[in-house]
Length: 210
Image (cartoon, rainbow, N blue to C red):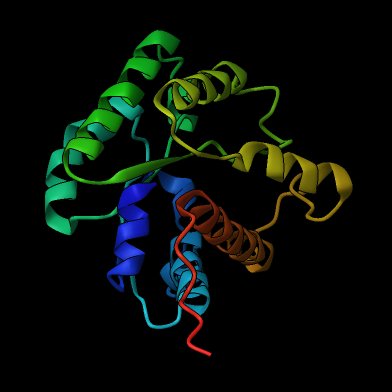
């Protein structure tokens, strides 16, 4: 991700998170505890001296096609070096044609790159309570395939959360109105996202003046 690498070298990294409902948490402290804010905090710690800014374009019930329509305005407003694109859940819920979904991903990548931004996908979150009701598999696979073709890194949130559920790291099955667990999940996702961003960008390490 050359735009991210250059932004880090220039000491100013701007990131735009484009997503739907699962990119945010409810409540007065929801924004501060959601993964975009945790991502900004983690990157700021890992990149001392670099001004890190994470902005969001997060609205519920949007398909990939819906998001693509607003991308030009959002990209022009924030001029990000990186666009993190979280999508697919609403497409699966609405049974959007998988080919149409893939075409929207291609189009969104082109728009972001034309605006000078690198792209990273974030695939859907995993929930054992909705696994049998929402057919996410084909959309997760199409997302992976588009990413391979377009050389876009993917943060595999789906597999990560499934592993957490299977291993008992987080109880994602039991319904609860408490936000504690959701906040911990978002914190983990934010920190792991920061690791992947840096791994994909491969920033040049500071010169050793000793």
